[in-house]
Amino acid sequence: MAIEEIAETTGTATTGTATTGTTGTATIATADAAASATEATVVTAATDATDATATAGSTAAAVTYPIAPGYQVNVRSGPGTTYKVVKVLPYNSRVPIRCQRHGQKVSGPYGTSDIWDSIAPGQYVSDTYVRTGSDGFVAAPCG
Image (cartoon, helix red, strand yellow):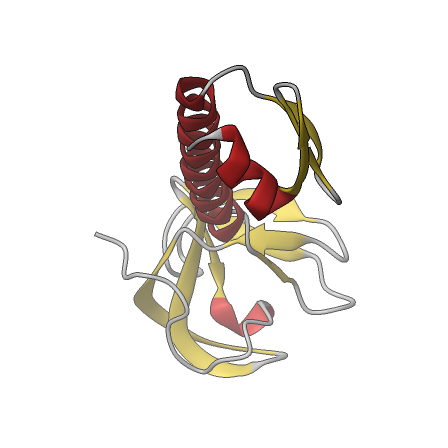
């Protein structure tokens, strides 16, 4: 793109400098430099889009759900009350749900269900104590 074309597109041109009203000043020595600047902008935009996608993926994995207010919830080694308690979640906890599976039917503040939420490897809580907003699965079945 020649200097004259840049002047028509971006505003005014003076000896090798194109001034754009809102984006600042870009120094352009030749038409080749203008092409390089355009390529750099495209690469930056593509990189930004990739970063946004990675961030969105990371954010999706970071979704947590609140435990029913006023409850300390047992975390068990498997999907039922006969499994060992591995820890107890404190009041007002939030948990990620890695995957879900059917297990022992349990009643809790959010109804009766046989769905158990895996919050970490070897750690399960009854879905009846987690506010997911659904009576069904909200995550992939555990494999």
